[in-house]
Length: 230
Image (cartoon, rainbow, N blue to C red):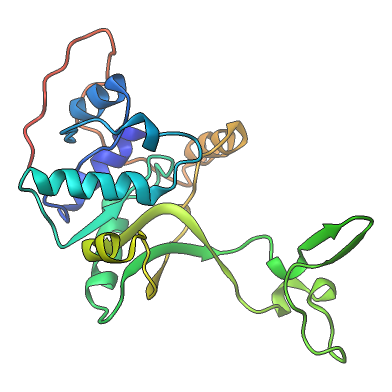
């Protein structure tokens, strides 16, 4: 999945540099094999299961700046979205670049499980997660999905933000966000064996395709060379 993400990033021709953040030497070698840069490893303190993105993003931005490498904007492309394509990235960049006064862009899709039908359990009682409509109207939890307000959920395919947002606001998103509504399965996120099974079926049925990867598959037992950065 890392190879597909790097391939899409390079093929989009949107970026001046494609950089992988990792605390693993093996992952760093793999990333370089597929054409990305890994100028330094991420500190272990910023690589735990509960580490917020802002920690490693701010570390990366500041560390690169100290090395004389600064950019106005950055994008996060998480490798759990292998069906994100170069075209996906180009479309998102066009949307972001066309907006005035925004801090960031985030990929979203129409939610499958509507929060209007979600509950919070308190002891032996429960209440709706969201504030419901006026008492004399039909409550959302008893309303057909098609009649509910359209609600979107973020997916992991991509985020774009101005670098100043990280340095000035201490967040990767800022306060003013523009939505990028993903199409088809380009926002599909693989996080567990069930997702993996669905992804394999989508590929087998021809419903999706993977970005072309020009390099031979990575072999951890073979010493790899650092690819020249673009």
